[in-house]
Amino acid sequence: MKRVILPGIAAAVALLGLVPVMRGQSCSGNGDVVGSYALVGSRFAAATGTVNGVGGVGVMDAGGSGSTGSGSATGTATASNTPVGNLLGDVTGTAAFGTVARIFADGSGHLFAPSNLFTTASNSPMTSVGSYTVNTDCTIKVTLTDTFAAQASTAPGTSGSSGTSIISGGTSTGSTTASGATTAPSATLEGLVLAGGTQIDLVESSSPTGVAFQMRKMFQLTGCTNATLSGGFIVVSQVFSPVSSAASGTTGTGSQVSFPLVARLAANGNGMFITDALGQASSLPGMQLTGTYTVNSDCTGSGEFVTNTGVTRMFNFAIVQSPASACSARPGQRAAPELLFNFSDTGIVGIGTALSQ
Image (cartoon, rainbow, N blue to C red; front, side, top):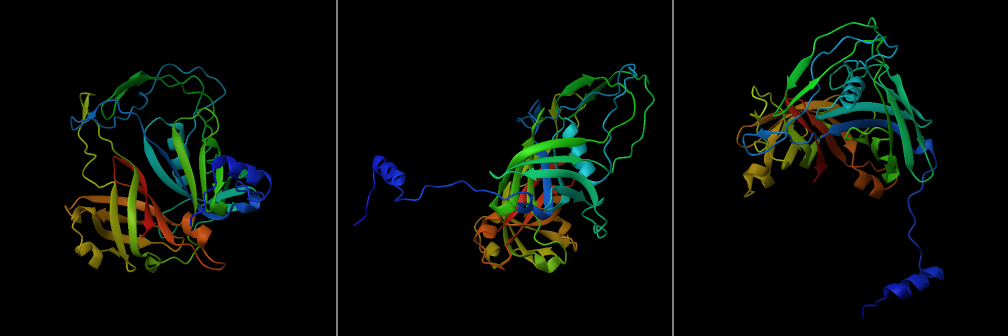
């Protein structure tokens, strides 16, 4: 016979201590966030025009160079051509983007990053790029600075001409002022530590620009190969926005429906995404992706997705731990691998995950 406890009775029993009361996750401090992480940031721009005449994402960007400089002491943030620099440069802009970087948390509140990523030489020395503080309620504050940025200076009072930019269905005009020494882009983030430090969700703590961040713990620090990826995965594209210029400023030419936002992937452990026996028997061939991939020793990599109709999308990825399997794993057991990726085709803005099936 099923026992039923009415809500009022359940509350009374809980007060008496006979039923344990649910408690929130607690953290012990900075030591709960330690190791190598993939850091992804993304912004989905508001629609301002049409894509293929049926409505889409028009990215409004700032205008060209601007009026006479004021000669003030502050300067414009100039990002370095590094993963962290690209990410923070995108954050300080206005356009849609999806960028993955890699950082290392030392467990004592300090963050470090390599100067390159998604290449065979990505085991470059680490450089300090910020700090973090984990509170007992598992909230976290993170500061990031592009310390790779060259500290070049610009003469105060430099003049320029007004400009107009037309990008993907919208026009905007703007002006710039050249003044003082350039500064490195930076961001202050706040969020929550989840799954024992396996996942951290973050937002900008002040003057938000519509950017969402997530840190996912890398599958392992080093020693990854193509064999690390093997088996079935479910691909979910969280943001996907073809961005194309339009001469008229009213209609773009991209297509959002040429690539599936949800699909199935099978890695053979030897650098190939294949259609396995399960995929061959599927009545939905449009949900099957094939392609190739290359895994670097630091568990980053690159590859291409190919649909059954021949559409190809290039992407960069980091192999990260599954938060769900990290919580359920036995002591000494490794969490299942997942992919955190961003599309790398010119004009394609998007990020996604490939979840272990």
